[in-house]
Length: 505
Ligand SMILES: Nc1ncnc2c1ncn2[C@@H]1O[C@H](COP(=O)(O)OP(=O)(O)OP(=O)(O)O)[C@@H](O)[C@H]1O
Ligand SMILES: [Mg+2]
Image 1 (tube, rainbow, N blue to C red):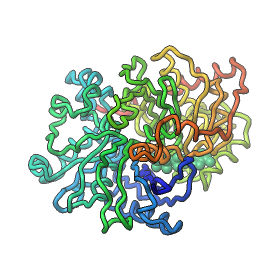
Image 2: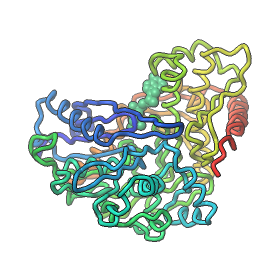
Image 3: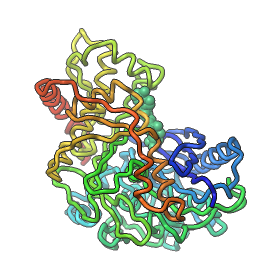
Image 4: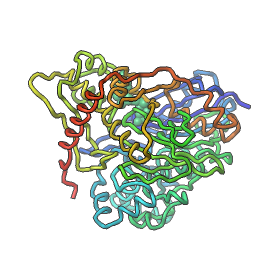
């Protein structure tokens, strides 16, 4: 058998291709950013053709750099930014519109109407999600209503929908010449259109958004021994590679962190933050503002579910300091600047740029920096930004405890922000539990590789994968309980100041 497994990680800001060996060690990678298109306040788009171009380049570059051919890969996995919506024509391969990104709030009226019309509870019960701009269904509806000719083409089955996993799978397997139109239950569970119990599209949910079933991909296991398809000769690989793994990025990171038992959780710090808790084969309904989602489905095994706390803006708040406020020139400088002061000097920054996600789900919220006095400097704002990442994670961790009644003992973390030592120390201080980071921080790509490799027997079992996990760093809490509670109470007050800002009705 071939020595390696490949994984495409199609993220919000960039696309990377990674190659792993049997020990789960990184053998090679290449990564390219794509354009963030923001035509109006609250709108965020990507160009699907640019993403496909970038995907081909990162694959070819990493494979060539290491002198590898398709035959060196036992399988290929795909993981992706979730919810982001592409609608394209399967005959021409052309997208009808730019991809509408998960952070985009243009569908706030669609989302608030669902609640007013009493459809919210049906969506919560069937899909496990609160009506929000975040998920794909409203974005599909928006394209159907605003782009000429799409609805007719959708009814004929010619205009099709996919998240970026589906878009890339279709292109990699031949596109207009026989490309497969598939997704997996983790991605499908973020559309607001899939029934969590049956793992099938739900006709009543489809009717809420006026979406024809013919547009939707087939839902296949996240790790599929039957293969979704193989790469074609005119694609980025020399020689066919079987594609056998597909997971949304946060579920992939949960797999990469080997959270295979109920009660195991991880928190990923990227553009946003996503805390997922494995709840086993039970569908746990949140009372505290979390989402119920599919964690993974491997082969013919029963699906495994998760509770999820999604936070829209964490690492992207650091990017905002860099690109919009321009008080730092690299993300890493946020740590240097924040270390110039001992605390945030009473400043709290609630980066509710896309409204607030878990556990609040308030699309009427917008960002605020509060508690300012003449004494404050850019260093306080940088420190408040890092604290905001941690306080938002605490909000979600509290909700998790409420829902499952088990206190968190240690938080497994990963993602780009976790190189920020100060931020991770603040996280341990604000939560009051240790924070632990593994050696392989690219858990998203690793999880997709694991799913693909399990399907073809490259790895025999999840136990074998557990042996690949090793801790690289651990942070212990240092704050007194009093300091922790005072800080958190202020944070809650700051959150209160951001609510009811935008009129969505
Ligand atoms: N030293 C640092 N301190 C704070 N934040 C940082 C640091 N380095 C990177 N980041 C932040 O981490 C984020 C990138 O993390 P990561 O690479 O995990 O995200 P990503 O997986 O590319 O995101 P996505 O998948 O959403 O595209 C950026 O938002 C960046 O601002
Ligand atoms: Mg990512």
